[in-house]
Image (cartoon, rainbow over all chains, first blue to last red; front, side, top):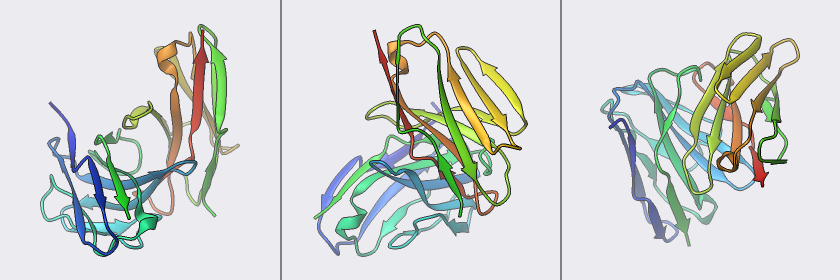
Length: 114
Length: 110
């Protein structure tokens, strides 16, 4: 089954404790992206990747890091999480960028930073 | 700046037709996408328009006017299951960078 898998689905943690949210896709997609979703603000892109070792900033990259060492994986790293990073996070992938190809979203990760 | 505007809420009754508008302001335009998201779920792709005109996919259609920087999603024969949030999205600031509107929450009533 074609899917994007995120882990964990839920996480409550404390300020400053490094965390990683994993994302994996099994569709051999080149393009992967991370979004955060906050009430009234829609989806805001954090980082995206056009292919292995090629990443770039989205609209809200501050406080986040990503890496793309393998085509299937695109982890999101919060080096020193803060309460304003409490949000619902989605990973997505598509065959190519540009919006033409459907983005397939993971089920989301709800992060609470205390 | 680069932005997308869509109404925050729309209400309609079962069987009716509803139109959700989206106006965009971007530097360079490639196409307009629409996504649906049910409460507690992930967004799912509905449509993409790169050229002017209407694209129909079953009960859903999407329209684009590049000269007006405007598009809309048309939902016909509304069903209760269409109650969801709908987002428009465009590449902005580069072909691969995507921005989404804040979303339109559609409530379908019996």
